[in-house]
Length: 428
Image 1 (cartoon, rainbow, N blue to C red):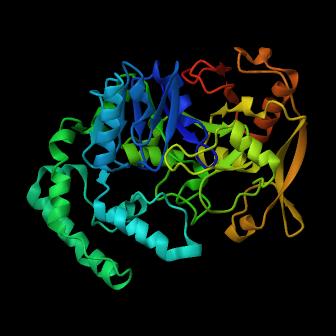
Image 2 (cartoon, one colour; image 1 turned 120 degrees about the vertical axis):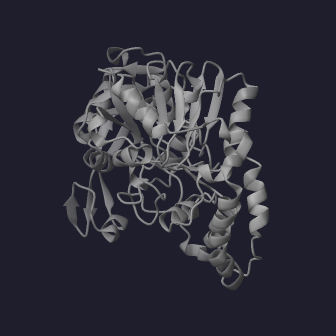
Image 3 (tube, rainbow, N blue to C red; image 1 turned 90 degrees about the vertical axis):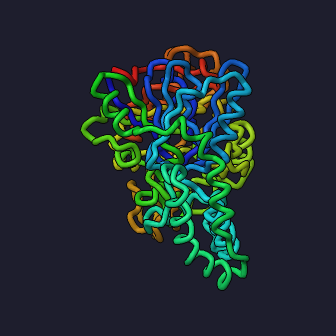
């Protein structure tokens, strides 16, 4: 039985929650391996819509164990609020496991995030202001607070004081912000300890044992490939590794145990926040994609920037992740266009470029080279097989598959759990 990585192949918001939920009934464990509550998944089950920000989507599948891995940064207040909201709706959350090595987002991480972004002004990155970046910075600087620290008050106080020695200097002298009191932070953080303790486990051991026993483990990335801190459109990226390699470090599972890597692609392209976006539309087509596709961030609430499908980005995602399959989502949103442009290459300084430029400045100046594909007007939301799609919709999917470098094994034709065409099984 396989261990699978499922990740975004664009800038995030591709529909990973739907894909994870689709597999949930066949999966024993679903693992978030990076990011924090800056990533959002929307999952529709029957007439119920669930917006998940920190919890793995598998929490909605009975029999599946959801896991928050060591690579995730956890805001305890958000975690407990999300758990409470699901419990109120009758969702069993008792199986959740949290790595004791995951880092905690503290109140001062959130403060630093917000004041830093304001200070940058026009040069701001477009963070969510939820303390994600500063928490990862503390982790790398070895001044971070981990989940396990909640259960040792003395250690917690020492670590918070050490972190604030420098941060309070910066807050006061650079940002004219009042100092953060260590004892108040510790008191707040300790208030979460008893509520979280029952979920904490050695998740690395549990996951490796599960794979060795032949159980199915799905590693779920937040954000997307082009937001990866190493492989994305830096500096307009997140602070972790949503790419496939991040699953290994963020969950403590070796790469030889991963059998399949599935990339989630929208049938068009969206982006939230600042940064280059070659196919972005500023006309009525862009507004139509935003309106029909419901393109508003699950976590941020911000309108998403919209553009046509970018095959250059898809090929790049295939390469850096070693993708074995694609799940194409929101094909139904494109219904009604007579012709649909697809970006097949870029023009940079008068030259045609078919791979993502290594130089960031070149990418900022890239102009899309489009190929026009015929559209369709038929409703596709009731299609249950590839053959039931209109011929032009079939041709569009095939063209994207050929351009992207990996087979499209599933297609989303609507927001509902059952509005998906499965072409190839992800679990073979």
